[in-house]
Length: 113
Image 1 (cartoon, rainbow, N blue to C red):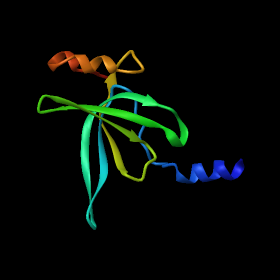
Image 2: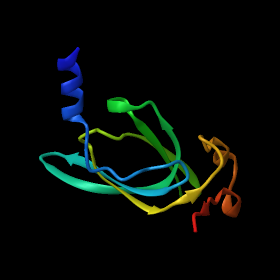
Image 3: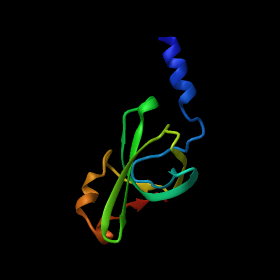
Image 4: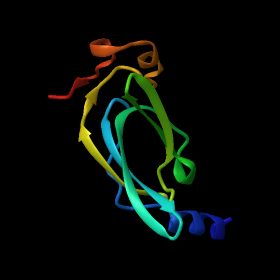
């Protein structure tokens, strides 16, 4: 049991910012195209956080060309190069799934002052 715990702790990232639901984040994702590798940015609002430990994930939502796009990122995945918090959001819910039904200014999250 201790070996499993040591293995999972060695795979976990140490230099992650504190990410909360409602925050706007920019996630750098490693994209492999043939033999080349590049980092693509995905910026949006964190609408959910799930699990904990090595299996922790967060869901980021953005609207591009009028279509909502959601991606689930495992925090400790090697495919996630970086996570930068663009702005902090003030919310009163643990999950912001209600933003899926809203458009325009109604889908905004207030900023922490």
